[in-house]
Every structure is written in C-alpha cells, then in structure tokens.
Image (cartoon, rainbow, N blue to C red):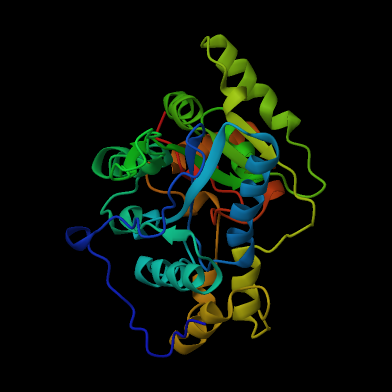
Length: 332
C-alpha cells in the first residue's frame, strides 16, 4: 500500500517533463493492434469511478473487439489554465492521480504533460501528444517474434527478436462527454473529426441513460463529411451503477462528511493532510464560468440555444462519469 505521509507535493514543470512509459505492456498477440486508453479531465479529486472505467473498457475490448489488445492506460489532468472554481492545483491533482494508480493498479499511469502546459490544451492535442510519444519517440509497442524453426539440432538456437507495432490511442470518458460532443458550437468539428477518425472514443454509459439521442447528430455530421465516426465510438454498458462524482466528493468534504470507500485510501489521506477542498469560497462553482477562456463564449451560446442543458447534465469536467466535453475542443 502506498502512503502519502512522506510524499512531498511536486511542482510540475514542462522543462522537467518525462513521458511515463514504465507500465506499458508488451503486445501478447502479434495479430492484434495495441490499444492505449486515455482519460482527460480535472480529477479534482480522482475517484474510484475514474479508475473503474478503465477496467470496464478493457472488458469491453476483450468481449467484443478482437482486433485490439489493451496495453496501457493514462490519466491526463487538465492544467491550471482551466481556471475552474474549486479546482485543486495541477501539482496536487497530478500527485493524487499518481498515488491512486500506484495503490490500485499495475498498468495505469499519469501523464503530467497537459497539466504542466502554460496554456489550455484541447483533447485532440493531448491524444496526438501521447500517440507521438508512444509511436514516434518509443517506436511503438514491443512484441516478440518466435525464432525460426531449425532443422539442425546441433546448431546454436537462434535468439528471439523483439519488434514494435504502432499503438492506437483512444479517448475514454463518461456519457456526459458524448452529450457535449453532440451540442452544436461546443466542440469544433475539426477536432471532433480528428478524434473520431484518427483516434476513437470509449463512452461509459451512465446507468439508466440512453446515448442514442447524442449519437444521432454525430452520425448526421459525419455522414455530411463523408466520414464514418460511428465505427470509432464504442459504448460500454455500465452493468453496476456507479454515480460517484468529484463534484459530490468535494461537497462532502466541504460539509465534513465521510468519503471513505469513494476514493482510494491514499487519496483520502493526501487530501486530509493538505487540507484540500475545505474553503467554502472555492465551491461557488458555475459551469459556464468554469470553462477555459477560449471556450466560454461557445458554451454560453450553446446554453442559450438549448436552455436547461447545463443544469440537466450536472457536475463539471472531472472526466469519467461527469460531463467534460464542452471544455475540450477549440474555439469554433
């Protein structure tokens, strides 16, 4: 078990950045495409739901996507440029994610690149960054090739050669993310096209919800562009309801309520020792005013056009099971 007692809070810097790859797995089946899952969000704080959605996506791949094999997973916390009320600093959020991954998983990692950027980075840019690090800088995902059969039993056995294969990087998020993608003016279509054509999307469907209404406009837009976005959108059914959200966690902490069993223990300890999420002033959260500077106008227009959308969705951009998508695209 990881303890936060003797863990100092790092101050992330882009000049000291190193891409984490220590938990990337080698491809076991050489006939499959290596798949890397990426969740973007504020993770303030990270919850068991954020971690659980990776496992649900892995099960979905194993049960119905035989062409892929999951070899890695990343959480990418948003930078402080997000300017969101109630948002802990990037240093704290990155560290909490790291502690949670270290305590609960043997394959999930935290990429601090987005968090240390001086400007807000759209999701499409984050996915491109991770893909570049894995496929260009690392050369892809290794997989062993079997040695050729030898008819000469006296010969020295040939060694196994390790080759590398390009990985596919896909975005992972909750159903609220899909809802925002379907709202005109919230995401730029160029970013949507890039994410849903080059990368792909896993959506964890909220228990009792129906994503068909959100998929309809995306299909219409992709058809108009001569694309087929639908083949790259994978809806994962949530078989056990889990509505844990960072918004509710912060409310509980502010009110002095228990969050035991909702977060990894090491994260609870970290929050307690550093006194995070206690200031009432930090919790005057307004969804529209929490957008990155370049996105607020687009969100406000979308809200005015479809009154009630923001209130109906609830929560904010925390990744996982909470709405985040309107914060992730470029200005239209």
